[in-house]
Length: 136
Image 1 (cartoon, rainbow, N blue to C red):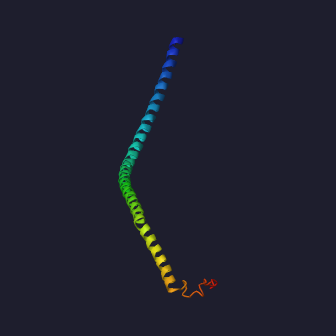
Image 2 (cartoon, one colour):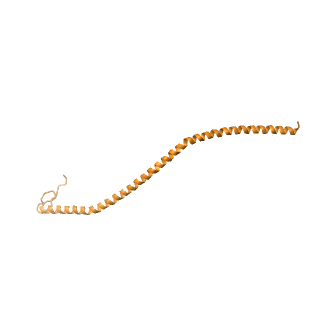
Image 3 (tube, one colour):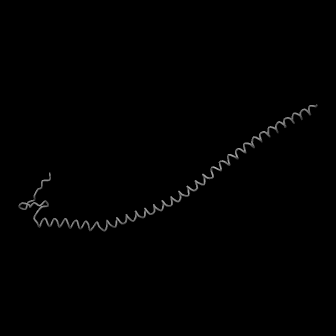
């Protein structure tokens, strides 16, 4: 054998070993791809129902948020109505109530003067003011 033939033989063996190594690597990669595909299918089988449940929960939450918004709007409307009604009642009753109380106080004072007594039922002596004992 010549040195050229030996070089070709060594190159052929090296190529054969490289091809065998590549075939082993490809076979290993195919097994891993199959395993990953199985894992992906299992993951898909488990997550699709979870995602569907999540969508349903989100839809329910959105519906509830709309209801809460409607309740808040109604509450704000009722609060505004009550506020305006209380202001109206205050304006309507405050002045007459004050006038009635003033008339009552004036009438009571006038009745006491006409009766000639102080507020506690005692009569003043000789037109002088009776000093009450406030320690009781």
